[in-house]
Length: 335
Image 1 (cartoon, rainbow, N blue to C red):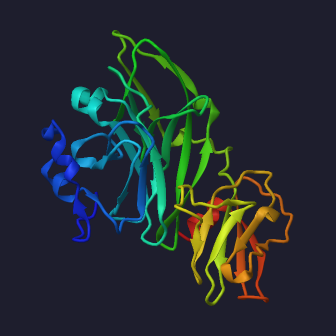
Image 2 (cartoon, rainbow, N blue to C red; image 1 turned 120 degrees about the horizontal axis):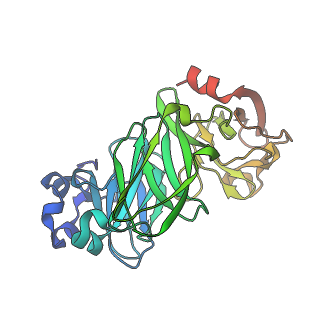
Image 3 (cartoon, one colour; image 1 turned 120 degrees about the vertical axis):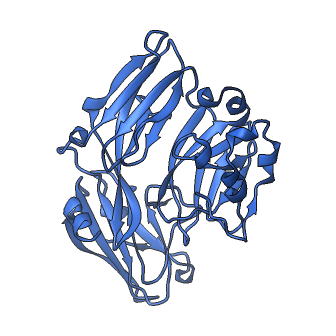
């Protein structure tokens, strides 16, 4: 749901929709383009798109983005969201058959994030239905990873997306786990199970394909990708965090470099097994363009979390590997 803050104005674009019955009155009141919102949605399509939270239903309507434009949203909770983008004109004509795409993003009151959407996703008279009975996010991706067919939040069932009839679809299933530290959802880490990969083709006799995702479908031998928990112990200095020259993230795309404020900690998930901790580095404007590198060649392993502390201020600045923990046990003990 979008916040109804008085600082946010209702979107006038909703009034131009030719099918106002598709948008509930509550959405007309609360949907917003909000200058104080920290989530930017960029529309890469040359067409107006409608935005929904999780599934394409009127009560989940978030707002409208004009073609090749962007809009800021202010959401009610700091957590991960599945943003579904639907071609507006297509939706008004075909509703449930309209072309759509889904992307996972994060909303934070402190850090700005950006998610890009388009309308080049699935469409048609067939239905792909996802029943997710797990505590993980589930993403159904094309086998070549060119697009997401569907995203289902934890415990979400009957997540339905349109699919073109009489053409083959080959897919892989990806699981992404929300990580909670000290009571706050802060990151999302990914795993997969190749045995769930499959293909299907719909026709008039079989117009629907259902994918049931159960807890035992999560391959216990497939560990979570490695992650790095950075604790900024500097008294006054905030830092940008990088892997090489690439800014780090918590599984969503930050708007600009991620800023880790003094006294805070953040889990970063942009790592793969075989990466070296020596790639990790930090910057602050007061350091004259000189980055602070972690002088440690530890090779990262799946299923592990690497805890890093950054200390000092200026010439005494330093960073070090404090400990290596079993990821599942650490998340369970500190959630």
